Length: 133
Image (tube, rainbow, N blue to C red; front, side, top):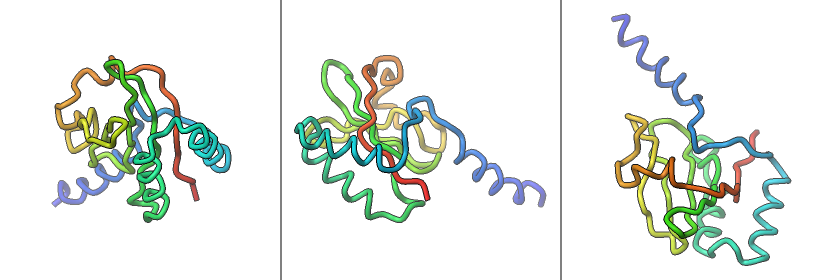
């Protein structure tokens, strides 16, 4: 009986834990300004901008936390940090093809398709961060 009571508590507590690739960044208008400036320079692929616009319309508990650009295997990729621990954190290429999930999910180890991402991803650049209410 006690075990059943502890499971929801453990899940809730683990959702608040930080992940390696989810670095802190400025919130609010500064972040929105970063996206606007980057979009003006066409440095963010249009399909990634479309994803971000969809994220903005989602409920806060479902909305990804941030989008981070990295250099990975000689290409720009976009890491989407999901709102909680049991979701995969997804990595997309510049054409919005899903490359895999380097972390997240129930095990925290992703889907196994990008095992070297944490070590090989470089040049972290915050593209967008959800507003905190």
